[in-house]
Length: 184
Image (tube, rainbow, N blue to C red; front, side, top):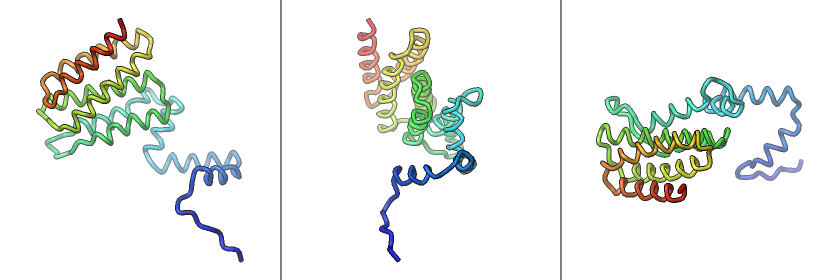
């Protein structure tokens, strides 16, 4: 009996080969099993197919939980988990208006949390500045009707950021001025 060589990790090619043998019913069953297996899969499929009233809401809830935790319950922050929500939306849909909305929401929640409780963490601030720049970049690709409202919200974040340490106010001022110069 010939022994099959084992790979350390299966790849997408291996999975694709197995999927090729499935019929329609088998594929639907597999997707149903994935849907039932984890809430993230449900969120992905709802977003991909535009199901539900607000496909951004689960992503916003994740961002809110990890950027603005309940400090009285001793919840912690996680920039990585909040950014993962944006990445997950990008993979599910990737639509620019939705991405910009999530990034602006990220900035609003992060700045609001820092302002409300005096939270000062250098890596948290660095992520805020990076997402602020990404939000302006994505928003700039949108039609004026959508873009202007998002930029106005980012301008409010910029104002709030002036009270933070680690040069956050200067960084967002520089980014915002650079964006404004390109627009004019």
